Length: 470
Ligand SMILES: *[C@@H]1O[C@H](CO)[C@@H](O)[C@H](O)[C@H]1NC(C)=O
Ligand SMILES: *[C@@H]1O[C@H](CO)[C@@H](O)[C@H](O)[C@H]1NC(C)=O
Ligand SMILES: *[C@@H]1O[C@H](CO)[C@@H](O)[C@H](O)[C@H]1NC(C)=O
Ligand SMILES: *[C@@H]1O[C@H](CO)[C@@H](O)[C@H](O)[C@H]1NC(C)=O
Ligand SMILES: *[C@@H]1O[C@H](CO)[C@@H](O)[C@H](O)[C@H]1NC(C)=O
Ligand SMILES: *[C@@H]1O[C@H](CO)[C@@H](O)[C@H](O)[C@H]1NC(C)=O
Ligand SMILES: *[C@@H]1O[C@H](CO)[C@@H](O)[C@H](O)[C@H]1NC(C)=O
Ligand SMILES: *[C@@H]1O[C@H](CO)[C@@H](O)[C@H](O)[C@H]1NC(C)=O
Image (cartoon, rainbow, N blue to C red):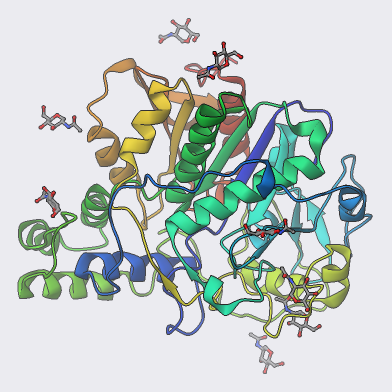
């Protein structure tokens, strides 16, 4: 955390990893989200897709004593870390759930996306990311849900997750975290995330609003949310994904026509006709050899670490970064420095958990939540890296279209560093849509400067520049 800035931002990373990965070997985000969509389309896992509403009310009794724990969380120095001018904390916040899962902070995504460091190819040393988001705010990384990364529970039933449980756990985490770091309690608070965090972020924000309302007090000073390449509305997310493949020379327009004609993406569909199955199998073959999270990215051809760090550049994302981060996070001295894995878990740290056993609920849409935020004066930004094929820009545009909003500022390019950073349109009710040009699913991995510019404008509530002159 950087003490200078007065804002506070929590970011959910690698948020789709943990879903439906148990039987698919090496876990990747792409795999995970694909299996969730598939399961939902066929109602295989009998996932509850109803709207998100219920939550247990959490009062002061949910907050455990935190005195002295902040000091223990201070990270003196990470192994292999270059000099820095900000403070870092890392540790566990134990939450008193019925079954008591623990949550950890600082995650793998922080090491590849918007955090202050990236890992060298030796898997041992770090280098600075000068476009880190802690230039703009104090940033908190949360490994959620339970079972992800260093987050764990001693009760195996906690590893059956779901949207509702996750939102409740995340709310409990924040309540307790503020107790441990009370100096941040009154700060403006923002939540951001990518991918399946299109669910986590709005659901947590909803819990915060409801609790503030029921307590008749600003328990948490939530000001806005920002989600990127986010799962928003299953039906349009899927439609938009296939249209993206058809218009980016990935799938044949004929196949896409069949998909749009025969597949039923509506939340109530239980089976799909053979023509739909055939066409979607064809598309799966077409995308098989791509990194679908960035359709133009090179693949990682060797998972080996190097004995000396390769020359690295923040502006040129290394497709083998996962391997470096896995090595780094599994090194015992890093875990000690992070105050992580204190109970000696029986499995390795993984970017995408295979500990989570199943998923109970996943509403088919979060649009009602986005409407609720707009009605309550929250700032809502939705961004999209425009070369992601998993939740592509077309999906996001279709989902926003579903909201029938009136345009406040017409579509225009936005600029940073004298170049087009992307395109944006602003809607009545304080909803901003912005693309990030040349970015894949993990926007700040691929376009760190543009992503930082975006988050700075979001946090200050200023419109994205419509000319390259400033
Ligand atoms: C945790 O919650 C249970 C039931 O809600 C309560 O009985 C118990 O005292 C709580 N434990 C702590 C440490 O607050
Ligand atoms: C899990 O069990 C270990 C060993 O008994 C204990 O030290 C730790 O505090 C427990 N963690 C939680 C979150 O209950
Ligand atoms: C909520 O708080 C305000 C200001 O403290 C007070 O005027 C109002 O009566 C309270 N409303 C309820 C329903 O308690
Ligand atoms: C889907 O099913 C629900 C509950 O059975 C029903 O209320 C809703 O109208 C259906 N939606 C469509 C689009 O058929
Ligand atoms: C990776 O390491 C293995 C085992 O040390 C070695 O056999 C292999 O040739 C290496 N691959 C590359 C591409 O360097
Ligand atoms: C935790 O520590 C144990 C023992 O040092 C190690 O084997 C395991 O891989 C670690 N797991 C995680 C999730 O960090
Ligand atoms: C959006 O507008 C369309 C066409 O006017 C209408 O059919 C639909 O119900 C509206 N959707 C919402 C969520 O208001
Ligand atoms: C560009 O943005 C500025 C500041 O927001 C505004 O005053 C101006 O009218 C905009 N110009 C165009 C061409 O939209």
